[in-house]
Length: 206
Image 1 (tube, rainbow, N blue to C red):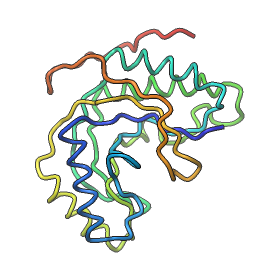
Image 2: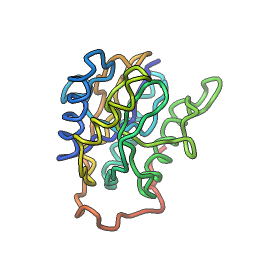
Image 3: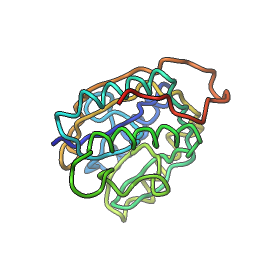
């Protein structure tokens, strides 16, 4: 079994701005346990996290390739805020197109997990409990307010960005690594803010 993150990687300038904000928080709180950078732990929006059988990765990556080819959603920031567990995050708008992709990824995960005991999705953080965000830091709760203020000042007017890639990553049992298993670039580039196609997700081969 492998614990994976189905993740959207934002394009520029959001990609670089998130790194700058995380580094600014780390400059103030050097013990930050969730430092975001360009290589080890890049900025990402987790669509779903679960464990999968290694043998299912081939079918999973084939279906993710189809999803990426149908165009990936824009990533629209809302604000920097505190979250449980000491996290500071850039919250992301739950747009219809983003939620369509979340639902499609859930279907891919459920097929891959077929036959496993327990929850077919492997996570409670789905659908109404899905809170799209990009993490900036993980620090002591007493320091969250100041770190959030640093994030807000650093990000400033962070604007909507395109999704650069849809990635499948091995993140380890305790989210201690970011090993890319597959990466699929957005196939279609639409003007930022343009109406994006919603509705049915493309039919994928079984």
